[in-house]
Image 1 (cartoon, rainbow, N blue to C red):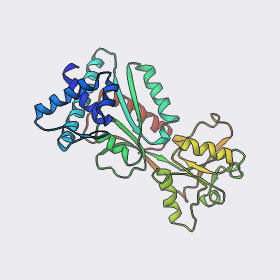
Image 2 (cartoon, rainbow, N blue to C red):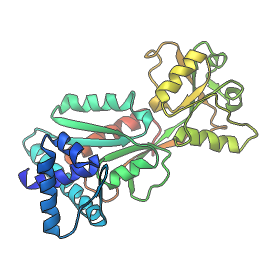
Image 3 (cartoon, rainbow, N blue to C red):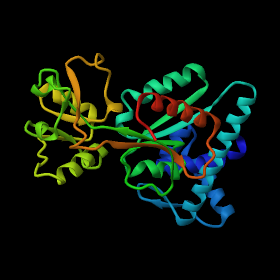
Image 4 (cartoon, rainbow, N blue to C red):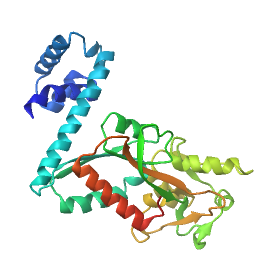
Length: 302
């Protein structure tokens, strides 16, 4: 909508950190964009952005304004979604911040199911770690968040907890592959590849090891679970993942997963939620309902 265009421009510059880059994204000239910003600053009587040698950053006044702007843009998307629903044609945009485990299999499947019924709805999927997911809700860059073992939950309205037992992932030729479940001490007798310290899976392992005389001595560390699983097969070593991040057994030949005994590593929790007190746009609320139904049918939830 045209009356929101100046707000859209300021939001774009804030995200890009540069008037030139924002202008390229908006397909307008940087001179025209700068004039818009100067006009808004003149109207407010304070600078919105601090001009730096290599870009711009928000001033204190700009921080206050951008929070209002993002609220206005989100509210307009919600209104447009509700109006579209009146005609039976659901439109809108759904933005999700999530842990890496959700990216390879679960979210592509869920988004495809939803868009098959509602092809006018678009999606944005943001990879956010345990600390960043809640912030994405607060700054309204995401409608929903799915995060494994988050660090804090001050602004998070939980919709569902999904229990996720830890799995050891290995080549089908690995000696532990013949077992239905494995003990942690058995896994650590072999070389292991682990995720970086900021991931929830690593947190589960470190918490479990602290209660024992075992030690974690990874031969490979990575912030990519896809790489870790592939490398476990390539070198015939052990890595770890939660069920929602694992392929179907026949989807990737040569790789298997075995649940780690719950006596050694209690299940972690995948948190699914939204910003506390926010009314979601129709499309996001319906997609959230679809995912909750799927979670409850497939996993142990509360």
